[in-house]
Amino acid sequence: MSATGALVAGVREQGSPTIDEDHLGRMTLGDRSLEREVLAIFARQTAVMLERMAGAKPSLAAAAAHTLKGSARGVGAWRVAQAAERLEEAAAAPGDEAAVHLAVAELQAACLEVRTVIGLRLGDCL
Image (cartoon, rainbow, N blue to C red):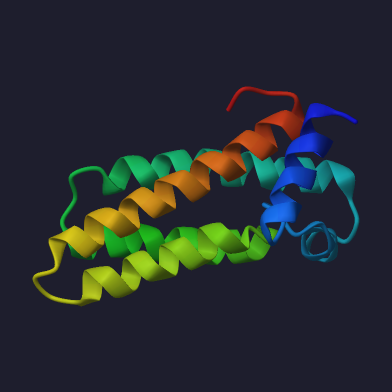
């Protein structure tokens, strides 16, 4: 089994896969070249959005999370989408900075996981 296969299999044992292959296939119409391109763009976008969140006000972090949520749903990265949604919700609750920091950490972890899987899949270090 390849490194990617082992990592994806391990994640499946924990619940859902890091990337929903069926969903991604539907969204890219089964075009493997398009799939690779979309995944590479998404991986880069996670890095950019996380950079924007670093030290940002909760409203700006929520806006970046909203962007990631939509993109994650497009590629079937459901844990990233859920973590981004929790960050939006935490940022909407006034005065709870601890919840925002926790939600940012959760989103960072989900993004690291998906970037690792994408990097292994594409044969890159993203």
